[in-house]
Image (cartoon, rainbow, N blue to C red):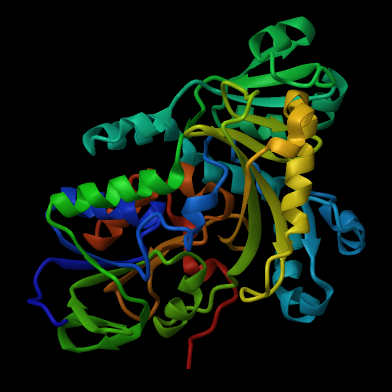
Length: 429
């Protein structure tokens, strides 16, 4: 699998981040090889099952002040939106400590929100432009996102989150009572207040969207290798050979964008990254009788409810456990229950609903920020992983940063918040 070297780049990982990076590199004249063990956009990838939100409002990190007080409840509850399997707690403890410290103070959270805002600004517009260039703009909608609350008082309790959004350029329109239900008739009447983020959007089928982006990259000259990357062999002249289970692939630059599987690859490249799987779930109802016309996020369930190409998807939950632990489908059942509460017309014929379930792995750092950086040991390797809950929304801007790093240019936005060295790291042996 060796090839001629010279302006050759390998992108390890073919999810939404890797697909966008492929196009950004092609735009700059690189010959691109994509490595992915499975079909692009397939069920093996986090991109397949995400909430499909493309939201500039996703600047609020998961860890916020006071969250540590809730950890004992999360450990004991089987229904909370964040759960930890007891048997894995000792191994996860260092990550959890970093996680809680990342949101310990308001200034820390404000700093994280600013960094996320730099990735998410104009995210729906960026997807619209890219998808149009690739001939798949039918997968992108820009009709807004609806964040719903039982009352204005509940919304005001969420003041820190909305202040962070406002300070990072997010604009919303408030809807109450009858105005809200005229806007979204399918919504349960228990919700009496909403913030409509009109510049938000969604993807109507994330898996097929990724597949379409990759197909477009292939027509532009990229090649796809069905293999799993296992490591690197370094040679003189800053050349690198990406090792796979099907042989080596030589290149000038390699980009690690393999989601949760990026951690061991980064370790071989010289950086120990505290990356863990936030195991997420979704349920989908095929051909629902009642569905919202735009995505809805209820405050009480923290469940993203999104129309997906003739289906209605409810996604969410954070389960911390081993990467290889079997799915706990009770987590998906919680999503279904919340979905039926949010849109009560669905429950009238619950027995007849055609329901599918999925479980995947969000690659998450403790501070909710991705790693977008050059390897500490080899400038031929660039990192682009750890996007957690914002992979879809931030992918085009991440690709722009990566293209600059691959070309040894300074990116157009501050990359310091995304450096691998922000963690207390040590060189891999």
